[in-house]
Image (cartoon, rainbow, N blue to C red):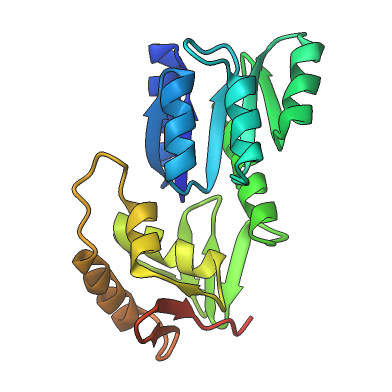
Length: 220
């Protein structure tokens, strides 16, 4: 999963980034509205955490411009306690959920999981493709009930494929979802991760669609 954290408080931004990294996300950050708008406009994110009180461009304006440009990634806004007008304005601007500061990090992570499930048409936090089950809450994968040991990047590749089970995911999309924006991205590494996953998963679980990408066989 790939997330964008938009927060101008460096301490809170760092805490959010570490919590998301620990939960298996690839994380980009922005400390002002202009940078946030640009990143959300040119990159594909699975979810965004958006503070509204930002320098240069406020969060509501950023969100409205994203939605006007048909950028439909799930957005969770962070609001000040008791500021109901801000919450309503955020939802009207296109936010999918909101969380009031101060908040518990576990609640934020749970809400993000729920947003991602809804955007991917998953009813639960456990995604299943045939004998393979991926638990997004525990970042745990099993095959026929037996735990599977994966590296962080293998897990991220598998999670993207299972999130879009039955659909073709291009190598470019996979690269963008497992590496942060400032990382030196190399699409050839995707082939390595796919090869490793195929050795650990049931035969035929990941299909190659020549010239297009890879597809997780949707046998759920």
